[in-house]
Length: 170
Image (cartoon, rainbow, N blue to C red; front, side):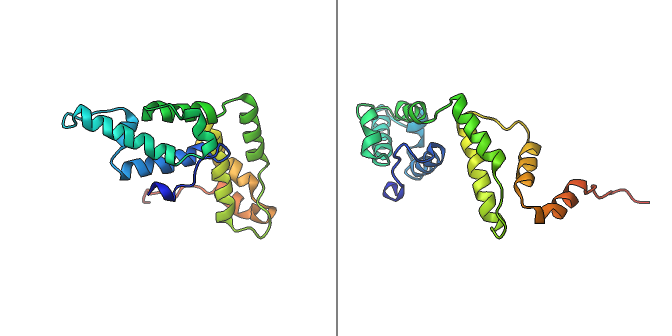
């Protein structure tokens, strides 16, 4: 299963990679090792084996260049945390660049909406991955609506001025 995961090279989105690797660990029954939890039924020896298997799975999903920085780490929890510390940049510059890309996003005429929505969601996910919280869902809706081409203006306006259907009877 791990051999189907694209190796993390430090250039891809860490959040997406970690989500995939976490899914692999769940499928392998190793998620407890990543979380550092132990059930009452698990012996210390079984726990140690699970930790080694989890570390092995995570390392097998890393490129050699990335692996060098964690080659001596034997704890899955610490290995996981070190990847976040190394590759999830939380600088003001990264947040600014991410917001700028999101706010400048425009759907080109002829582009399928689903393709545009995928790009939008990717940019939002990248912002969240650098600890940038989009405070309210309405901001996402406004940003997405603003990114649509002029030909969508009537639909956007119809959605924005739509009044809720009354459920009261007269």
